[in-house]
Structures are given as structure tokens and as C-alpha cells.
Length: 419
Image (cartoon, rainbow, N blue to C red):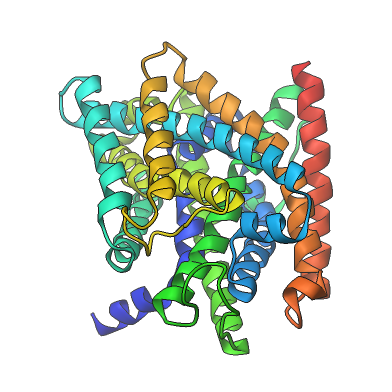
């Protein structure tokens, strides 16, 4: 028990950020990849891990060193016009994601307890708003840490279902790509779901929140944080652990879907809840329950982070008071955006937009939004005027520029296929 408490104390924004990446919309994307291509895209989990780690470490380091979130840094040092274009895209993409995630949580809840969808979505919407608005950050951060463990449901599910581990190992270590439009679109969707703009904003701002919590900074954007090389090193370890956990869960979701849905000819998944329901006759009641409970748990983790990252981005851009460490009366605009973004996501579920279409739009917006943000992150992380002695290492630059160019090409190719 003491070791578990030490572990919980050690994990921070990096681990929570990584776990939140496996939200219900991500689960749907990974389930679709496993169902459609079997074990054929398992290698993407190994491929994305170092790039995701490099990008999120930069975001965390920017927040720690500057005492600002990404919006605050961009507003202070770079183009404000570009900032507000990016903020607009992030807001739209996040709201679509929020709507899709709330819908997936409610649909999964309806599978577990036969209560109407409208009741379930009302409950989960209210709960997610109250979590961020009323609970103090110190308590809220602990709550998020515990929620991350719901993701182990997907690890357990993969072992409950029979697997061909020799084939799994081969497809994980040796990419076997098929050069088709469908395979490429799935690959781009996986990258867009994994390396997502809302994660950039969230981790940078939560590192600042942690500095305030530990009295290294009085308030966001005020003063220079008192950080040491040890602080940077601990953040780095936390981020590596979080991104490893995120990609491992992605791997096991694809693995479960490949060995059940894909193996039985169910090639198209329109939502995370559909994946859970389809799993019951193939993997048994235990696999179904774990998968469905996991969707609700990850939604409770991810929706507040999606709404929170949107609010951090806009509030800092407008120079409003920001932070979960502040009360509602101290930062009404900040919390107002959280409430509004979640409420719009709630309303979207009653507009007859197909769940998968909503996820698809969100993935497209994330894919388009990520490249300019990655360019800005690379620029900031290498700017000595902003970062001082904590600029990027050579390894960070190599990994960062590779994924920036890669995702830019992917976004252009995605637009080409769509248009």
C-alpha cells in the first residue's frame, strides 16, 4: 500500500495527460483499426510512442520554465493572429470531441443500466461540469490520478480473449503496410487521435498548476517559477511513463478488437459503445463489462480535460484569470468556457449527427490543427529568450521535427483525399 501511495504521489500531469488521450473517441478509432485491419496496425503504438513523448515533454517543459500555458507564451512572444486561428480550431475540435465522448459514455451506461440515453447523458454532463467547477484542484488532481486506472480494463480484456501471440509480436515489431486509401486514412486518424492539440495545452497548463500547488509560482504568468534540473527530470520521467501507458492501452484496444470483431467479420465500428456491445457474444460478459466500464471511466477523465484545455487556450489568449487552482468567483470567464464547451457538446448529441461522423470531423480538425501548433511548439522550445538554458536537446529536435513534417504531410494528404 505504501508503494502504491508513493507511485500515486510521483505521477503528475504527464501521466494524466497520457491517460486522457485514450478517451472514448480514441477508443472508437483504435477499435475501428483493429476491426478493419486485424493485427495490421499494432505497430503504430510502438511508432507513435517516442514522438508523442517528445512533443508532450516539450509542452511540459515550456509550462514549467515560463509559468505560462502555450496560449500565454504565444500571445506574449509571437503572432496573436495565428494564436486566435489556432485557438478557434482547438475549440471546435475539442467541442466535437466532448460531444462524441459524452454520447459514448451515455450509450455505454445505457448498455449497463437500462436507463434512457437522455437521462444518462444529462447525468454524465452534470457530473463532469461539477468535477471541474466545484472541486479544489488538489482534490481534483487526485481524482484524475485514480481515474487513469480504469484504463487497465482494456489490458485485462485483451488477455481474457484468446490471442495468437506469435502473430501479435510479428505485427508489432515488423510493420506490414498495405498502400490503400483506407489503411492510410486509418493511420492518419490514429496519429491525429494520439498526438492531439488538446494534450499540448493541457499538460503545459497543468505543469503551471503544479508549480502553484507547490508554491514555486504565485499565479499563472506572474513571476519566474523556481525550478531545478531535478524538477525537469521528474517531469520528463512522469511524461515518459504517461505516454508509454497511453500507447500501451491503445495497443491493447486494437489487439482486443482485432482478435474479436475483426476475426469475426465485424469490420466497421461506428462508436466505442458499439464496440463494447459487439464484444459480448465474442469475448463473453466479462470482456463486455470491462470494455463498457472503461468507456465511462475514460470519459470522466477525458471530457473535463478537453473542456479544460479549451478554456486554458481561450482564457490565456484573452488574458483572463485562469486556473483550476482558482475558485469560480476568482475566474468566472475560465469556468464559464468550461461549462459552455461541455454544454454545447451535450446539445450536439440531440442534433442527429451520427456518432462516428462526429468523431470523424473531430479527427479531421485535430489533424489540421496539430501541424501549425507543432511548428509553434518547436519554435518556442528552441527559443533561448523564452526557455533560457532549458531549450531542446538534439534528440528532442530530431523527434520533434520528424513528427511535425510527418503530420503536416498527413494533414495535406488527408485534405486531398477528402476534397
